Image 1 (tube, rainbow, N blue to C red):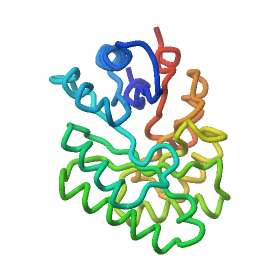
Image 2 (cartoon, helix red, strand yellow):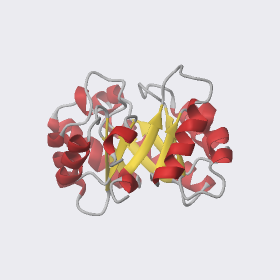
Image 3 (tube, one colour):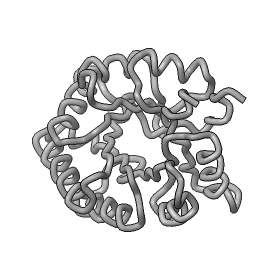
Image 4 (cartoon, rainbow, N blue to C red):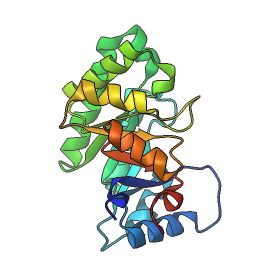
Length: 216
């Protein structure tokens, strides 16, 4: 149960069986996972299915490349909140981070402000997609997220060239300090993987293999 509370039980596939979201929600409620993470089109259905449960509904914004315009990301976030999302995982625009960091930070600040104006309790996470970044860029992205008022930084979308590593989680934790959340996601398939990420500083885990990770 303690390990289950770290997990965002995730289904972000483009396909799957007809009852994939309902099954995800049922499993999350049964096992006491922290949240389910679904695509924006599934938020309202997941929220309705989890009504009365302590499980939060998380969705992804600007997924998976982060290259939408600010206006599109803002609309997507507000629409997700209107549909019942409790947590939003934004994907950073890596090109903007590299070539115009001031504009990137301004975008993050705007997304944070508009989301909290719509729902003050919303939890905001920034996916920095570590597999494409240098260590210096990872540190810069984490510090931007902190200044912009995000609650978490997150390693990966799970759709890039690599997923979470213990080294990246450790670097992110050292950068943001003990209070801000660090979410490890991508490639976490075993209990050993999960425990390694937590030992390195992760406070949340994004997992599609959640049932293989927790004790039976």
